Picture 1 (tube, rainbow, N blue to C red):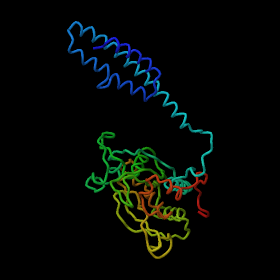
Picture 2: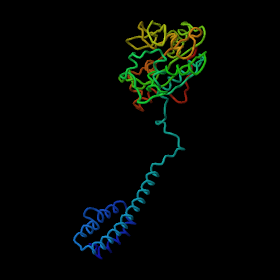
Picture 3: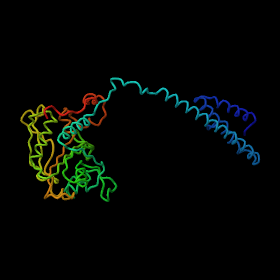
Picture 4: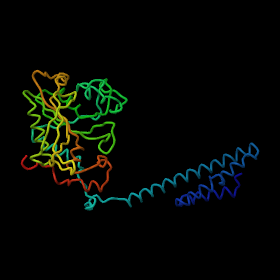
Length: 355
């Protein structure tokens, strides 16, 4: 029952609530509205009263309970806002101050390699193209003459998306070759492009990652020969590795989208890892003359035009050039690693002297 003394006491507590700090506010809330609080106890006592008296007393208790609840809520909102303002003031950052030297950023090795690729191929007259990370299976496989039974199209190798793109199954692109298809469909030859970008495959170990980067190259025109392909790739590899006499070897291979197809090897020392030294060979990229079916799929007459294409893993050539042993380190966001392998933002990528 809500006695007169308890009523007076509760109304006095309303004044205390308005001035309470966070700790005192919680103490008052528990004392009044907790399981053993004064208002909770008064509500429990209503069961022993006569109906008319219970109705009158219950209305009075609920009125005071509502006043106290509103007062507690309002005071808590004031305290929370004050605490937030104090935190914002304490954590304020003066953006006008220069950064501390030890916090200076660096260009990631992947970004640096992309800049170097743009500089080298840009000097050869290549244009940079980009495309979406989510593709349909026509651009990623069928248009590239990759048959339906090819292992690359299996779910164990390719990340499929539970959706359709242009009424065809969608997937995370496993290579940037799909941008070659988009380009050939969108413009007439001659075409000379490189396509750097993210790609996705179901691999993860020291030399493979579910997300990695590739650069595809495509040249389409009249009278394009295997000699143009070899000259282009030899110049690129010697410029990138800063080795004017770098040995380069072309081996016959097979890719569905090129004919003939070739693996490209560079000379290196298996024991020391030195590029261009020793008598060993290291596979570095794949290449070949664009298959006539690929040209026809894109509306280009293979009797009039031909061309070459190549693809290289950006992480792979970055690891070789800078002596990085584990691919996973590229994505662990370790500031110490970035300080060691990163590049100054003020040092733009330049073509090597004599290229």
